[in-house]
Image 1 (cartoon, one colour):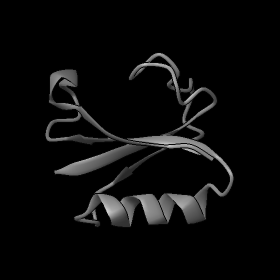
Image 2 (tube, one colour):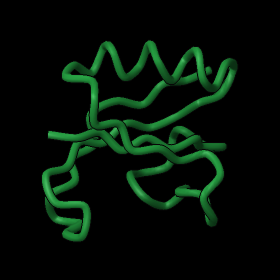
Image 3 (cartoon, helix red, strand yellow):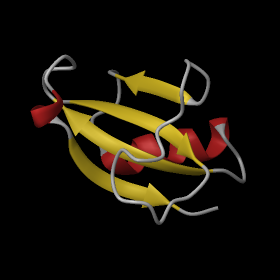
Image 4 (cartoon, helix red, strand yellow):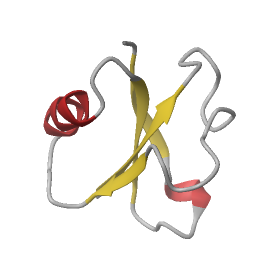
Length: 73
């Protein structure tokens, strides 16, 4: 299981509607095993920003993505 995280301007929007265009504000995390570890890392990387965390098993198949957490800043 891997994690996909992106910064969001509107954390209340459902799932993918607010995903940014381009490569800024997104990351894939492969080295952490827990949601808590991912959230803590992103809070340090993107202080005072809201973000959404998804898990996935196949990056090229959107059906494998599952929303896990929304962090409100």
